View 1 (cartoon, one colour):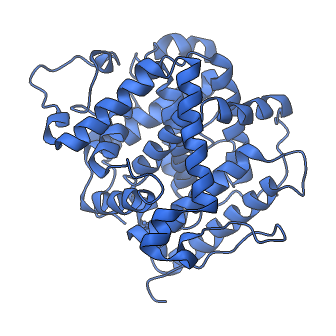
View 2 (tube, rainbow, N blue to C red):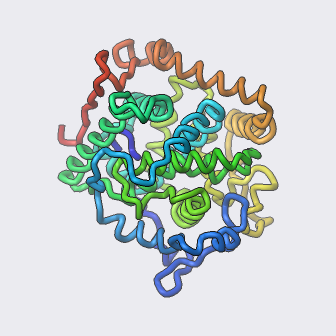
Length: 403
């Protein structure tokens, strides 16, 4: 979900008929899943579930015409408390790779033109300063969903959920009046992918074979999607991991892969603002390296790094240009260093503890002493809060183009 506001692109996602082949109004489904598993085999386990092609067609057509579900802020009937709590607990176990996956997902979301238009309209992310404040708010809201008690209706979990949904409503109505379009079910579900897609579909790349993690995490985000206004029929997380995997896979193959393969100037500009903003809390971030990470995770051709990156059902083209060599030495170092860490070292508990500790320390400094941001933006602007002292939500101001 777009936490806080949302931004514009002159390029659109290629029409499905131009991206891949459609037969009788339905997309052909690849026999291989982008998560390294055989999708056809998984489909046999889902005979009673909605076919992923039907799900995507419904999402892209009807989902682009509907706004917020209008459902009350109540837990759905299918909510599983134990599974949800296990989903929350995994954040401390895999904090480093989950943060990295969500950052790549936020970059990927910027390739979706309808979401980019709303972000542009609200003017919350178009400069390093506004992006810093917006995405730090996003980080804090996400942490509230992982760290606070869902069973306590007075907890900051519910305060955060209500604030984000209220912000979506304000942004959607304001941008609709500006002609930028409303936030639709399609936009919400595709943004949901940004938070959940790469860490689950890319789990095999980092040898993360914890099935309970996948089951619990997707259930947690199914609940979060529902609370943030996504109808069950559009929710990218299904009734279990098997169904979720098929939905996530087809969205990645049919939406994100072509969108990220054909990005334009608006995408680059907004990604630069995002990374340059978050650079003030992590000076190891690099625009080109992080774009490479996002496109690699979406299986965009030319963004492979390891030989197993080609093991996704698509034959390797020996003439394919590798964009890794287009980057400067610093960006290539960040890519090589980062991928070596998560691919070969992250599996060891001690290394995982160290990487998680580093991210936790960055979070502490971001909240209590964002010294780089203080130096650049001044103390008043550097400190970002989503809650007031009394626990109420901190409202944010829209920066609409006619303000």
